[in-house]
Image (cartoon, rainbow, N blue to C red; front, side, top):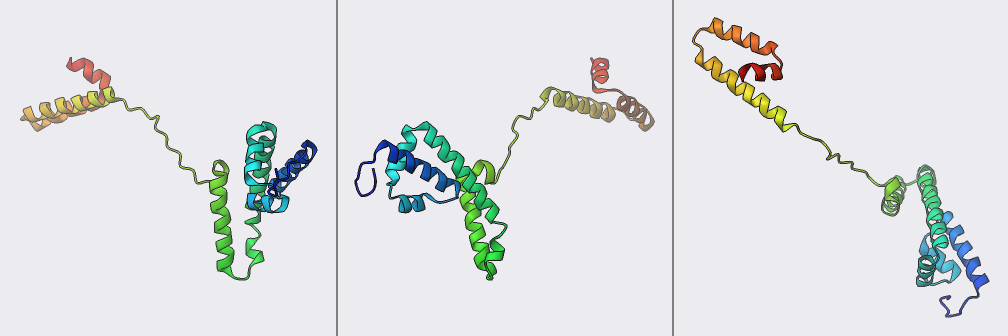
Length: 165
């Protein structure tokens, strides 16, 4: 249905759908499509909800339009003499792209929370340090303590664990 209340024939609907997809691919906004075609936003939304092929076509066309907007960012400085106007337009386009196509143009923050911590190894190391410090504190002879320390430093944690058991 058009905004004037007129009911459209199927052939007319198909022509309007093609025109809408074409306009999306040109990077046109929904408000411009509504103004030019006279089709209500609710009607376009209904068509997209009911016709999955039309909806997929709109999404693909919008992605092409987003790429056009992103490409236009490169030429904006040539269009304006005023640097602040060029910056404002660029920032507005970047913001719009980051919201409408965040998967491609949004800021990404990747968090890797799949790290594992080997608590058993950390506990074994802590036990080794505790045993070593107790051993060294009990020794009065510095030469003897140095010899034991050198011996312990040569052992792997597993060897140390086996020898102290």
